[in-house]
Image 1: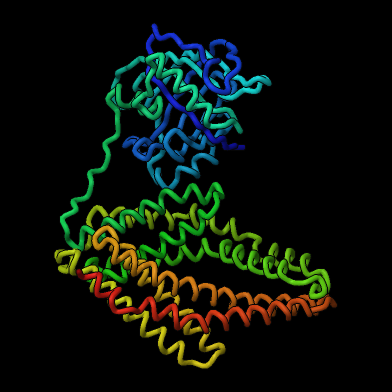
Image 2 (image 1 turned 90 degrees about the vertical axis):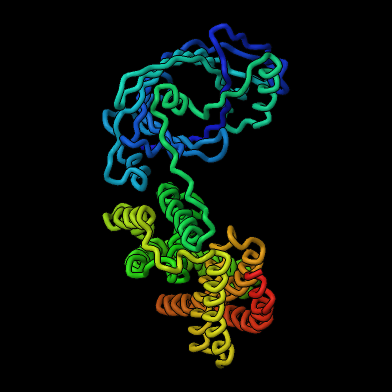
Length: 505
């Protein structure tokens, strides 16, 4: 079974002659204990074209030391990585293979570099003897295993923060090391240094030519969202906070871009991809939608007075949530594991490699993008007005939901144009986002009312009081009505003519 460890460390250049300073003079460090020398032997894996290294991911099989096994590392921030560990086996564990699937696809991984390290370990401790950090002096020998035969050797110092220790310890230690003439390494990891020094460093993709055309601007945005799909796949599998939501947003942004910028990219090509994006977002959505709805209803229950709570309402809500949540995560993972998902990622790669550009792609971005944004604005305006003219009720709820979709598309259109149009696009997006958020809250209240009717029916069938569910239903009606009253003012600010005029200045 895989486990995850947050790794916070810093690396420093060293030689065989480097001598460590007295680190008990570093703030917080009371003692330094010698833990001995450990021999480590690690084989690093990647695709033949080094896709993992290009994305700063590390996959290794290591023997020796107390954490022998398979290790997969994802970058979090500078000097911070999440290390997912699995037991030592002859072949790549399925749990790690799944986390690599969006990047590896059909290619598989092969050995690329072998690192043998002699690790001289010291523990930095506080006055109570608690370990603050582990410092190791590593003598490393690297051998290239992929397409060639070369080697390299170096010595480095690594300082890794202990679990739950204050990161300020690393600053204090670095201050002492720098005073002793020991400086940070330019290489972010042993693997990156090994690849570089054995001639295997992956080629970074060339920056797209920002030639000022609409085609270049739209493709840059599409590339950003396509990369998000790849990056967020393992985050969803790891059940990281907000990962499902962010992956769905990337799907929606891509679909919106294909529709909004239809004069730039040929919809004969993008429409089938858009259909697959809609499918993926739908498969991911069940867990997220239920999670949001259950949280809303639980919060509403918390807002009731004790005398308004009739019957086992909290237990009823938990049981209802469990029933509807069952299998939703499995459904999301099945979608990510499906050939259909890989085909979608491959289709996006093909689109970016050979873009289906239309004549409108050659127009200047500063001219073409504002026109597309204003077109989506008019689409939104055509939905908002009639929706507000309807009497409160089912038809108005449906119309406002359609307006919300249009608001989302107009906002995403502006977001895509921010690198080109700057602050005017950002201001327009911000105003439209407020419309979208208000309409989203309204739709949540509509959905909650349906759920509350179901809960009331279930309670009655179980001979439980349905009073509390009726109270909550009335409150959701009040919330929706308040949002409908607020909408005209929010829309007036979002529809101010100067916002749209500024897009073309």
